Image (tube, rainbow, N blue to C red; front, side, top):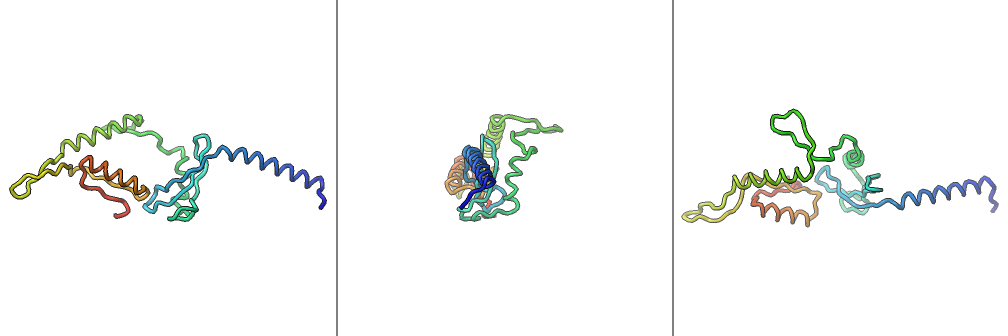
Length: 176
């Protein structure tokens, strides 16, 4: 086998490109996630470099989709990297004509206050059953809705949290 100068140049360039690409790929961290568009819960692999999402693809080891994705699943990367994607919570005051950005802490505090206010205003501690008052400790004003992309463990924790808040109406997306 003879190697010409042209072949040697090609091998050198290809080897250099491979080494450069190897260095670039070494900084990438991959993790598995679930598609959030529908109740199928298809698996995806996300690639991140320096805190930025650089690629998403179907997870070939996932039992639901075996690496294939529908049109909505394929568009996950474009949706995530869109400059129009909201990245902070926004609040629109009653009667206002504009939205204002608020911090995540403000949003969580506001939601917690509203849940507490509704829960306290609609709390039912007892119900009459025949001649006796029986304790029920619930609110009929708030319901909880779970999602199919959640794991069994997450659903268990959501169920516990909903019951601790006194919510008798706990539903799941996959059942509807």
